Length: 288
Image (cartoon, rainbow, N blue to C red; front, side, top):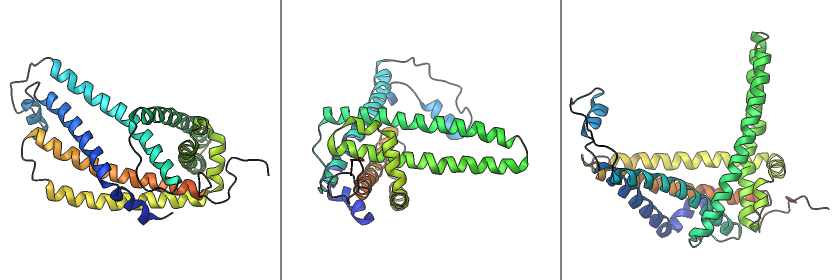
């Protein structure tokens, strides 16, 4: 897996990524402006700033059309935007699996459908982890109640569950996502046992993926902190301007970081034999 190639990926597609940043920023700012302009929020802002009620006059504005539309818009952006981003990310992974480092064209309907199925599959993996942690937690509680020595054994059991189930399930989700991106088979998303088996067989590759994830997070985090420090004083006291600047910085760095990680996921999938160009690994368990 090539960290440099993953880092450069969104910058090679900067025009498309920035256009997504602008669309999402404008949508958020419009909704926030509707909310801000629908009532007098100054007493609440004073309370938040001073830590106590700074004004005896509290706003009596009831929920109006502007406020309702603003909050509803934010909810819609978060939900449908999340579905779309998941689906578009799968399409991007599919292109990288083909050896193409260009972000795909946006197909809102297809991206939404893919994102919905990815969301459902993420719930399946989350449910698996919840069940495992409940079972291990109950067992650890029984063991820990025996004595202090067994408390240590209980902690070891919980840590082992994290290593053996939780972390590989994350890799398995990425494998299912890549298989779905590669051949469009929704069943691959929910083929948890097979995906887990692939993840465990390639645990070393998964660890290298996690380390590269951490490296990307550190790099983007440092640059973002510098940019926020330089631009922090430009917003002034205007709530909408401050929100626009904050949201644009948030989306810019998070989306560039996001697409870098998606490229790493595609590289990881190729390394374990998913998609075109991967090593000769029989990831679908065909008869020899």
